Image (cartoon, rainbow, N blue to C red; front, side, top):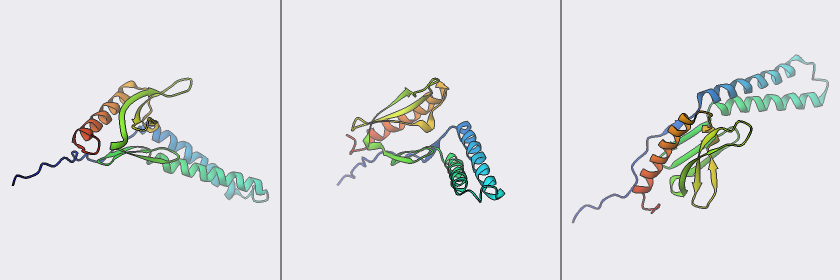
Length: 160
């Protein structure tokens, strides 16, 4: 009897793509808000005003959340798929539900470029954690994600 060939996709070593400048700016902004909120609460001047306590507690919590999430922002890539980790949430996208990888422009006065995913359901997911004004950085991330998706699809019996 001959050995059966494995049709599993090649393993993808775990890696995280991110924008260091974006992480630093968001960490600094979050830290400043957290310190402002903590400083106001510790000073005792707002203790008599319940509304002030609530407002500065929200400022403290929001700043701490921004500082924490900025440290994990990015797109984690591994054999199971992509995990986009933004400021508010993390979204897991398995390789098998991705139809195509593309690039697009963000909205706003000075739109940034970012890689995006088109799912088999027709949904478009922009990878905002990789947004950049540098087309060179976006093109490098796009090429990597596209090549990893192509190699997964070629070796995956579920994607065929």
